[in-house]
Length: 170
Image: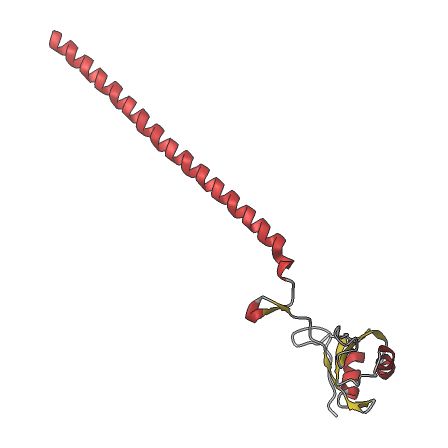
């Protein structure tokens, strides 16, 4: 039988402590499942998801161990073993997947990033307001420059006219 190696850290490590146990007979309960897995180490939690239509478990369960090494030992020894006349399939449990996200599935709820989205939306609105204010100020500066240039040009024209008038009267 092949042994599963569980690393503590680094790429490719498998610190999982929860196991999926499939192929359970309908009379198996949490106590029986706990008893079957306790020889491998301290069991933290056992759960059997219930089918709401029938009120019975759905033929699979989850066993969570305190230590990853215990979970690996249990998986190595219990996979393809027999419990209540049925062959078990034991693997590391996968995280719950929620509809949405990349490829149609995500590991977090759709609303989990709502606060981030809202803050980003507010920041974008503030940037738009600031850009409009800066644009308005720039236009006002251009208009003021034109008016002052015209005023300066008008003053120069008036000075030239008065100089021409004085030159013509002499």
